[in-house]
Image 1 (cartoon, rainbow, N blue to C red):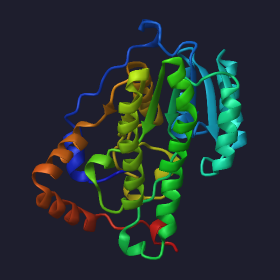
Image 2 (image 1 turned 180 degrees about the horizontal axis):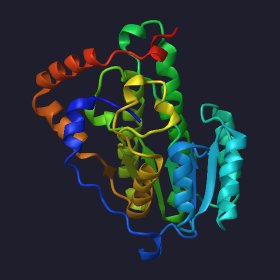
Image 3 (image 1 turned 60 degrees about the horizontal axis):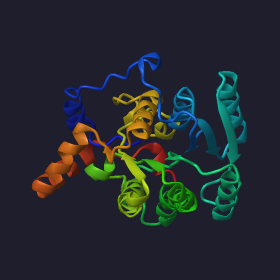
Length: 293
């Protein structure tokens, strides 16, 4: 996920007490046991870590990703550990392929839980984006239209059976509004808003939605940005623990304290935060990768 105003936010995060996750053996039986859980972007990073954590709770996994070999490796690891998983290789920006995959998945029954994890991050200033409309189109394609197509395809069966839960992996940028992330944050904000509205419409059918607004997570997606090298970041396993907790507890949102503080400042002192973000924007220039045409 994104790394935004590293210096001031890092100061806030030092004082955040992280929840302690009890060992699996000390937990009550998980509500995920025996349920079908579809996870996108499951071939690496947060998605892979989430797949392993959900499998440990006895869920029946439906794993989706583009890379067949990597997805096959994850499925094999789950099955070797005694879990149950099926793989579906699909590009979530290919609408016809996604529709076909949804139809195939539903042949095995409704999906009880959906984790929209697959995504694309772009850190590039508007100054370098004047001739790059495709940056905005491709982030919307994978971060917004892909998840929405999945939700629309799986939601009828969830509502018919009277149960379902969707977890959207978004970003703390939804609250912070950091410079250089216009394409990325806008696409995630669209999904965040869609889920809030969908949750209100599906509430009567016991179908709920959680938006997890993650901070920086150390994955290959953030590797091209030099500013992230020394930044404080969560591991994919830590992010996966939050996702599992969200699947089990079904909260409305999962926020960081730092982003919530900045959100309040954005509302109560907008010009001050504009000034502060503009100042820090100059301290963290575009990466070499962002400057490539």
